[in-house]
Length: 429
Ligand SMILES: *Cc1c(COP(=O)(O)O)cnc(C)c1O
Image (tube, rainbow, N blue to C red; front, side, top):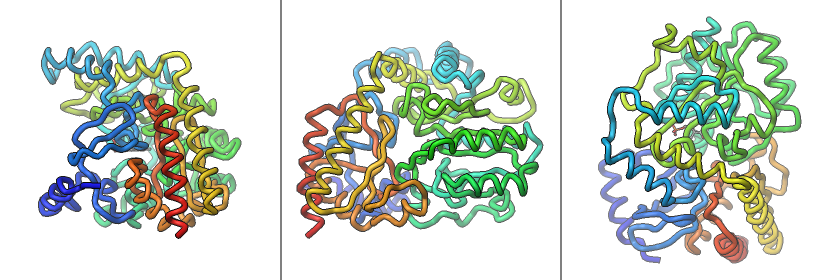
């Protein structure tokens, strides 16, 4: 496999950008080696600057659920773009977006557009604090909510990949206001709320944890969190930046039948453009400026081109049977991977929820963060490279979920399982 152009670019990039990248996990640090540079993408495939083609199970870390470079998304962007890139005054697509959100996710009675998932979660906890007059927030070990100071306490994703769950630069006074809980532990949550429930502004959770690979909630766990928040007057915030529109059209809240007070979105909502959103109960959202006193703003928020990409993507995923087909394909893929591992005598378990999945090198069923980090991440790194050499790109970390798109069909899944058969045998030695 020729990677000369990527190597040259990465060499230049490392002298100019921290780690040669603009977001940490892209650097391949936890799996070793060097990242490839993308030239273009189509459907289920990424094509690098040296002409190598990869079946892509990341989809730009989530947004590309309809496949890369979907003609309908590109056409929508081109049409809106020809009228100008940004106006700084309201545009009609923002209204359509807010209406679409409320229709697809009924708890989003009112919403505010921002430019990333990070901005959405930061704004949501500011609102929770402002609305309740309380300071503490609760998050879960291994959950990632973007890089806001308050969230870099026992965080997942890159922070977990690099063993930096608590970042330098986060003032202790602020970190002290973030309480953490082990995900899927009923008792620990009950106890924390019994101790300090009256000081908690909000509890933020990835309803399905996608930043410690992929951990599903135990039966009744999200209901338990809902009940605790209600009882103690804290706001329940679902961070659906990853799960939104992916695990069901209405997100994890639809899948599990929970109504959070606030929700955050990102990734799919922008269809590949930089977009985030937060929203929820109208009575809470009215407290945001300019209708209320809690300040939050954005020069490019609600950008028309970004709205066009997001709306075109949200249109595609409303096709009848869209998520059912994705879910069936995820099962095909994960069952195939488990079978291939078993045949090679390698201990692997998978977790799945519709169009997202986890792959762990362990013989245990993974339901907690402790079990996730106890899986064999060195074996994952060897598997990652063995797959990459066979033209399959999984996330370059043992702690990131995998994603399918509607462009992943039998050909791609078949190729992936065949490659995995060889890869498992290779890493077993
Ligand atoms: C990706 C992600 C974020 C951060 O979104 P950015 O757009 O990268 O800032 C927040 N929460 C969750 C659950 C995510 O997966």
